Amino acid sequence: MFSLAYKIKDDLEIDNEKIYVNMAFDKVLRFIDAMNDDELSDLIKIEVGLKILIGEVLDWDFEKRYRVFNEIQSSFFEAEKAELKTDIMGNPLPQKAVKELDVYSLVHDAEYIYSSFMQAYGIDLFEQQGKLHWLKFKALLNGLPEDTKFRQVVNIRVRKLPTGKGSAEERKQLQELKEIYALPQKDGEKHDWE
Image 1: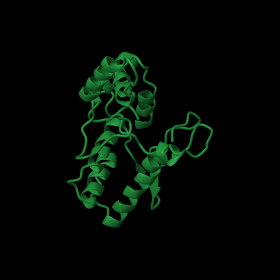
Image 2: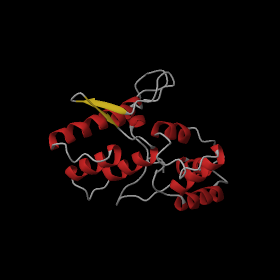
Image 3: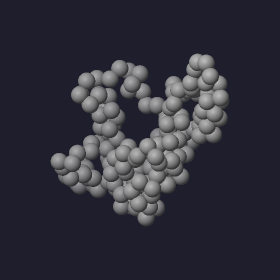
Image 4: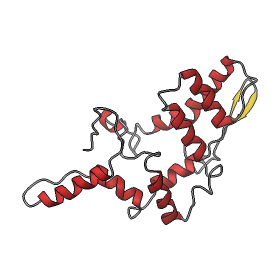
């Protein structure tokens, strides 16, 4: 959880052992890629995930690897999902609002994210690999101004097609832009925002 009141915590304690978790944004992006790779078995995902976020763990038995992996998931990733389930007043959101909309992809929109960080903050994300914390990265990403390429692309994806008299040309232009900037989809998948 992102809080300015406390230092960012990047460690876990398991079996009286402090384990440092490397939450640099590039490590987290690799971790997310591995967890979303359908070709990897769950066992391989645990091994790869631990190697990405904490380094070599070859001397641990499988039970400890599994416990550490689950603790990383619940401490660093599941807390973020739970946080998204309320509005700014703390009220629960309707189920439809809780559903994550695929309006951007950290992988497919990497070029737009990179250029937008340079434009808005003067931050070269390649120079920040291994340095910029995931929580800071997400805060900066969420705070990108509307005039950045990333925000413009997301806006095109979520904008409703105009209806009514005299809007045929505008509708056609927006539909063409939506096709240009569409995210790759799995077979038969249709987005709610289309």
